[in-house]
Image (cartoon, rainbow, N blue to C red; front, side, top):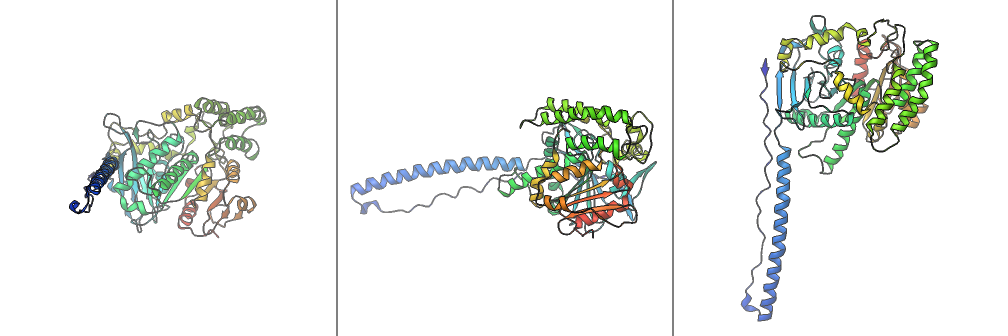
Amino acid sequence: MKKDSSPLIPLLQPHAGYSGLSTVDRDPSTYPQAKRARATRRTATRWVVCSILLLGWVFYSRRSWKKAQRAGEAFFVNITDPGDLCVAPAGPSVSRAGYIGLRGDTEESPKRSFFWLFEAEHDAQTAPLILTIGGGPGTSGMTNPMAVQAPCIVVENGTAPNPNRWTEHFNLLALDHPVGVGFSYGSMVNNSRAAALDVYDFLQKFFRVYPHLSRNQLVLSGGSYGGVYVPHIATVIHEQNLLVAKGRGQPGAVPINLESMMLSNPVSDAAGHYSWNLHARCYLFDMYNSTTCAELFEILPRCLDAIQFAQQTNVWVPERREAAWKVCEPLDSGDTHGTMVEDVRKKCYSEHSIDCLAPSFFWMQDFFRRPDVKDKLGVPAYVNFTFVSDEVYGEFHKFGDKIQSAHLLYEPLLKAGIRLLHYVGAQDANCAWPGVISFLKLIRSPFQAEFLSAPDVPWPTPSANTTARVIGPGAGNFTWMLVDGGGHFIAKDQPVLVKEIVERWILNVPYF
């Protein structure tokens, strides 16, 4: 295992020394006694004023110096070269993996985010950077890369080259987010806002290790519970960018070139999610029988009332949010009679939904738990890979994190010119497409009126029936795509099609 030397980020230096004040000397012998007295008083006054200014300057400089020191504080970083662990069709990919310590991290109480960076095959120095995370809450951020996006994908006994990789033209940064999932370990948070602040801290430190990437376009990518994560992460980045532009950002912070966001089959609005998921399972997919539907439609008004009650206050009250989550949960857990919620075209009769996932997800867990793999990725032997963290899920559940309207966070982002893409598999009953289009229609943005009146235009593809609603030039500022041939894991179901969707989106090439 080849290791990069950990960069030592030097402390910024204090301001240059005080240069003194200029004075004009005059000959007091040419003045009468009274004038000499007044001159003496004026001189004394000047010295008092100058002394006050000097003390103020020293105080300000000391504070600035301390801020500069904090800006340059060292942080934990351990990066390795995984070598031939992930081989692309053209040969071993260039990648780096490892850990960055987040704010509050110490040896005694660690808080460390694991990442795996895959360089673009073409123009890596200037290629856009995709930050990809998992869902859940509690799913590893390695899931999507090693199933679809990375130069290789996990197979039964290791990895295989991925012909549909996203890394031909884009750098891919896979992050185990939040701390507690995948290989990230240490002090955990319990909500998406706090987790987003951790991502911002991670990115600032990541860009100090890889400063050339800080200038590149950043694209956020997520799905499922990423529909809550991504708008929070984008919001924190946007807020901090505004502060940096005003000179009021965090010490040493650089602006982050956030260009767009990509979401697949997300949950972003709790009320719309529960309402339209029940509609889809009862009427669109016929998953629930009439008895189950009658019982659950009786619960739905109580669910919506609980959500509204939880969101009434300006202050987040976890007890209200968790209570609403508990009231609404039965709507998502009715008897489907073997129909898979992630893909209604498939059947699975296990009592545990996780057993119905594709075998590749279990291969992935086996792969990342291999000692040789952990060693090549720089993972400590005592850290176990957690594909789905029940602990993280439990903490977010107690906070009531799902009971929110995260889609409203998109409004200022869209107004600021940050583009937004949703591409959704139509055969998903986990985050059903009617719930997604519902909250998209509610987003008050410069594109709302046009979006509401625009038709869904067929986009001819050889692999699946797809429609697109594109608002804005190029690939759009506000774009919705519905893919008939895909479920919850749309990129895994339609890798060729999704690769084209993603490439056109990031390069801003029109779909028509």
